[in-house]
Length: 228
Image (cartoon, rainbow, N blue to C red; front, side, top):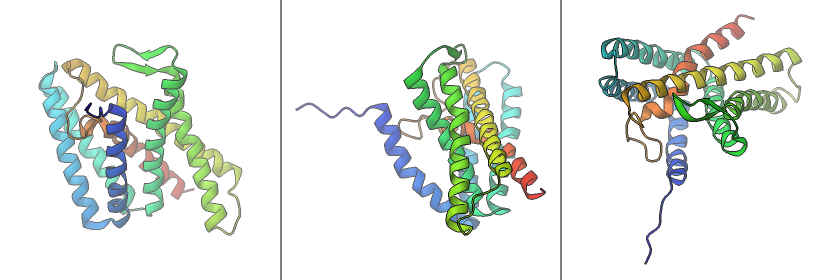
């Protein structure tokens, strides 16, 4: 009897269905469980970055930069949840997921010219557009849904819609830059993935590369919004 062949996409979907709700539950609860989760994730990402950097040129520079980058990024992730309501953490995670999914779906559907073939051969300009527009559109939908259901049925001002659209666009852009940065590191080290910890996804750093660079930017955006 022929065995069942599990494709990479099926592995990715199964991993997301299992890990996604668990991560959301811990982020929602906050407190020490959330802090311990971030510490564990940061240590794994640090290990993967150092492991790949040791196989790349300019190892010392890469390692020092990676340690500072990962620690600052995770500290910003902690501040997004600890200093602000859970809804903003949910918005941030939704932006990142929408950007990654939008890039994948639009890129696979539309295809077109390659964006950075020497760094990440699978990336296309169409996928890049999907990565920017998907979080921007989703953010506006979520914002208007929040006002409709929790603010007495009133829609937000157009200026707020434009601000949140721009925020989603910027987060998508920065997230793709973070993705390309890790891709560049892997290309320099001549490795495909940063690890094998997540079935179908590779290393943890492969999954969190967009979120890490976007976290400081999102924290800055919501700090600006709080002061408006």
